[in-house]
Length: 453
View (cartoon, rainbow, N blue to C red):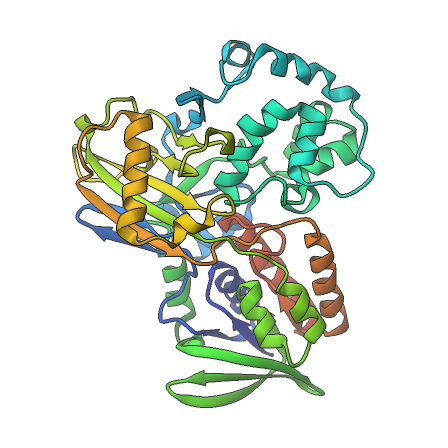
């Protein structure tokens, strides 16, 4: 059976890999000249620069299966043990997130009143309507935990606004603790037991890893394995259903082409997918256009180690919105993984913009690098200018699982149920992490193989 996978981001490539492994004849159509979507790595002046995701977590067994298939396990590198130390900014100072009861009691990140508020959490009732993550956390844990825990966390994961993100869609496992167990503390304990039986891990406890030569090697390796099945420079214009299957219209090498396929996997961002299916599925197209993608800029800065006057033992820090800074947070990249900076130097990766301050991500690369340096210098006691800088800008970066997102996904699944062989697999459906995309790629491939092979 002939299957077309539209889009060579990690979702599309993972789907294509597992389809080929299952015996399908696949073609991957990608409009760009390189694979990976937002995933990309390069080495400049001895610095390993990530354009997008810096790492992922071992939250499922599908990752190991994929890496084994690709003979990539030796390329894998785990985060340094010190990365368990993560920091939140409060009143201009970096506070380590507590790692246990003792450090929770002693931390100055939250006031005594906020800590005492946690004892009331098991007695809070369930919500009767769909809530934002902000409403959910304020109701169950109080405003201070929203401001100095969840708000910066949401900025770090989604570059989003907690008041917009749906807790059911964006954080389904957190929501399930209330829905299934009646509370977060009770659910955390019981949920850990169930995950152990299933062989899965919570993202908070799953081991963090990257690759020695950067995350970009993963899409590159899958592409090499797929070989001639991947066509770059193939811009898909439309997909339509016919009695015998589907027809894909695309442009490549300045020529218009049409090909018939038995199955379609649409693995492009929501706005691109909306354009591709507009003539065939106008209602679903309109639904997909509701998914927002805020802009994000990534500034990678290098310094001599002696320029930074604080201990860089840890993962990095996140910035709550109430602190009114111009960055979302900074990762201490060279502390987490080896070979990220030349000997005697450090690499810092700073994120700017998002839903919080979208205009900042539209500034020039020099202005973005300047903001990153000024904020980091102030918060980390850095002396002098950076010795290296590289900036990546994403006009539409991360899909937002906002209030109403579940209705959009219902529309997607309804269309899939009515059109055998048509699937959508992308990071706006069932998780945004690299690990989520790989797992969903296998799940999609299995559904197709069961239905048409």
